[in-house]
Amino acid sequence: MKINSSLLAILFLFVLLSFPSPSLSVRCNPKDKQVLLQIKKDLGNPYHLASWDPNTDCCYWYVVKCDRKTNRINALTVFQANISGQIPASVGDLPYLETLQFHHITNLTGTIQPTIAKLTNLKSLRLSFTNLTGPVPEFLSQLKNLTFLELNYNQLTGTIPPSLSQLPNLLAIRLDRNKLTGQIPESFGKFKGQIPDLYLSHNSLTGQVPTSLGDLNFTTLDFSRNKLEGDVSFLFGKNKTIQIIDLSRNTLEFDLSKLEFPESLTSLDLNHNRIFGSLPEGLKDLQLQHLNVSYNRLCGQIPQGGELQSFDVYSYLHNKCLCGSPLPDCK
Figure: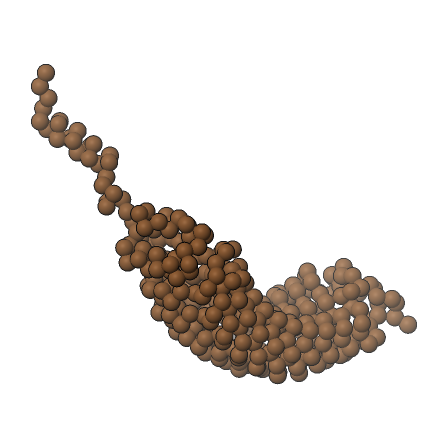
C-alpha cells in the first residue's frame, strides 16, 4: 500500500510540533537568568533558592515571576527565608522589575541597596521585618512609578526625606517601627496626584505636625508612639475624608471640644496625650469601630448615643473628670 507523500509530510510536521525543541519552549531571558544566579551566589546559595537551577527555565523558579508578554522577570518576592547578608547590588540589574520584596528575613542587614535606584519600573518596594540599617534613601524619590513603599520593622535611622512627596502614584508609605528622628516633613502636605496613607508610628519623631497636612484629604494617618507635640486639630473637619487616625502616645495638646469630625471616620485613637476639653456631641453621630481617648485631660459627660457606649471603660479611663456611661455617672 502506497502512502501519499503529502500525507507523510503532514504526519512528520505533526510529530515535530508535538515535541518542540527545548530552545523554543524556554521563556526565561538569558540576561535575567544570569542576574538571578548572581543574586543567589551573593546571598550564599541559600536553600530557599534551591529551585534556581541554571539548567531550568527561570520563569518557573521559586519567588520570581515573568511578564507573560515580555517574558522578563517582573517580580522578586523573597520572604520568610533563612538568609544572611545584605541585599545584593545585582538586584538593580533586573530592569523590568515591578515588585521587589525582602520580607521577614531577620538576618538581612546593611543599608538599602543604592542600585535599587535603577529600577525605574518598580511599583512596589517592600523591605520589611529585617535588620536593615542606615537612612531612608533620597534616591527613592526617583522611582516615579512606586505605588507602595514599605520599609517598616527595620532599624532605619535619620530623618524622613522630604523628597518622598514627589512620588506621584503612592498609595501608602510605611516607615513605622524604625528609629527615625527629626520632624515630619512639611512637604508631606504637598503630595501631587495620589494622597498616600501615612504610617510613621513607633519612631522617635519630634516637633509639631506640619499644618500643611491639613490641606490634604488623607484616608489613614498613624503617627502613634512618637514624641510629637502641639495642636493637630487641623487634621480634622467636616469636609475631610479621614477614616483612620492614630495619634496615641505622643505629647499632643489641644482642645478636643472644638473639633468637628467627618462622617468617614471609623477609628480614632488619641490615648496618652495632653488633650483637654470635652468630648464633642458630634462623636455620637459617627459609625465608630474603634475609639480610645484614655490618659488625657478630658472633662465632662460622655455624649450618650451612637457607638460611644459600646466601648468599654478602658477607652475613657484616666482623664481629669470625664464621666457618664460607660464610666461612673456624673455628679
